[in-house]
Length: 355
Image (cartoon, rainbow, N blue to C red; front, top):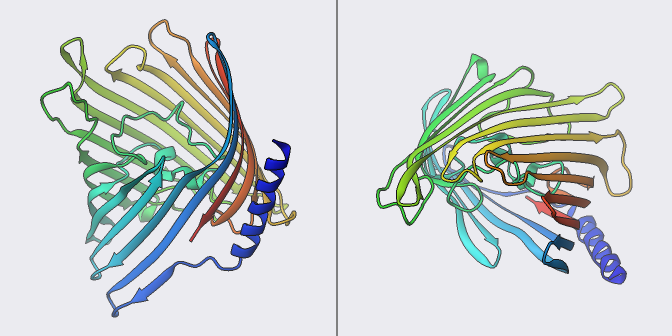
């Protein structure tokens, strides 16, 4: 197994060295008001997983394509554009994003189609913009039906106070439960205030020092008759508060603190209802070490259900070499997740390329 790890690290390093000077998405200018942008991204991981349960232990090792995406963004006029993005994941090819964007005023847009609905920072950032590797799914568990945290619907997205206050409100298809005969819509909204640099609707969990961030956000999501509970329909209701502080320090390093609290009030079953917490710390010292700048990270998650079932906790620790920011990175990541007497430990080599 050691030789396989060494080969994987060698191949990853070579690929990133070749790619580190060539990252730029393609742009086709049709006219002064019309243009098309193309790009893509890929995440590959080599993982060693050890699972321990009451029924026995198991171990697995392998390489997989964690995600592979291709996108196209088009600006049709000064006020209308559209975006398409596909993803290959878990052996399936799916339409990740397919939406139209209409500028209603200087700071107000209408988005319609399939996209990330108003939700927590983790979902709005996505796995490509984390200081660690794994999406924080223990704490962030909104029941958004489409893969990649997307849903079909529309939203008003805007900003106030010179762009410091971002807001969004939308209506979407919501949780698709085949046992519930009536279709109902999900309503979600988010408001976030940035005390330092502005962010916008789509966020990141780390800007790697390109911005100084101190933002607090609030999200809610509701849907009537979302689940079937022994023949009776039940609602879904959840909300969360999240916070990000990222600061360039005087010595050239970058410190990052992210935290979120979740309240899953109604979720169709008591084992899914409860409270969740996520806290993440990251530090990027000044200077180049080997291929690029280094960022160390640690993250803790906990979900406590309302019934008598066991809590779930997860700890992630990582060390990432940032050859070209989020566009070219390679890292080693360790994760330990526990629920009662069951536990899963994973060590991964993660490779990410994005243009």
